[in-house]
Length: 434
Image (cartoon, rainbow, N blue to C red; front, side, top):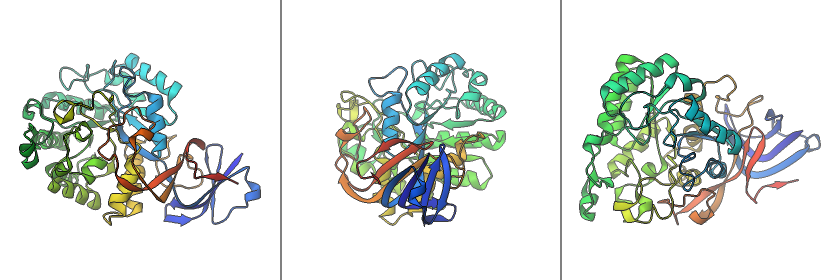
């Protein structure tokens, strides 16, 4: 059966080109300027759209097993599909945490049963996913995890991180680090330390809690020469550390998130939807992150999708849980603020959200790691309407988590269609079959 998607501009190795794209058996069958509609079993018209490789999010929290009231693999992947994602990498702060083959298998079984897109789990670095103690059984998980991380917790000692890096190198895996030195954390810290935290009278988290641990880890990697990835970069100091490490030849990549690129501490309201970890930085931090996107220091944008219940996010900045939802707002927010704002091009945004995470994390022979659409590629495809204007309404989210700092924001750009291996996993009412 052949499916034709017509009317759009396709992301190819030469950039965007007005082409018809034909799918068959879960792959791209053909890319041509014009395909005979009579030779297709199904024709989907997506006029004036962008057709791209599906987004990949290297950093999500799906909460299952252990906290299904916040999110499930089913609802989380439905939210991802609605946001244009065809693959997500799921962090290990679960119950039980994936610390050995047996506990990992519990998560894999649910993924096999319920996920509507591809889900690649992380294995925990430590035996109780605490950032302390001893290493998890990394050997038994290596063949079934995308990388190793204790996200939500920084690895608190140099000795333990060194041991983890050496083990990951031996296994051919990446260490993905939540950089947070807990010795810098004040009691009740809920936002970035600075002028705004003092004005609000709230305990501030200093930027040193992030960048000092990043600095330690990068120094270790200079010696160990493994593969290292930094989660949710939020400070100007971390950006500069990564920039220098890349110049030194360290195998390091990093991500930031939409909220750090669009917002800063001056945007904060005393509302749980503005509480995330790490917290929003200063205007200087935001500008450094944008510069990092432009010059390639920052490799990708991940959402750090971290849903909580309404009650957990309804207690103001001081008492609400850390974390916001992000899968369904990432593209429209980034397109509106960064592309329409003239900071980066649409092609650059696709590379940050789709191409670069594939190239960094997808190394298996059966994965599409080119990052552009071509004959023979797996048909993980997202179709985008860049003209639709609307306000973000969390009540329309597929995710159980409704807490976002972007609620009410006027944006442009919407996902029309998401396909995983040629199968439609999300479709808006704006697309039509002929």
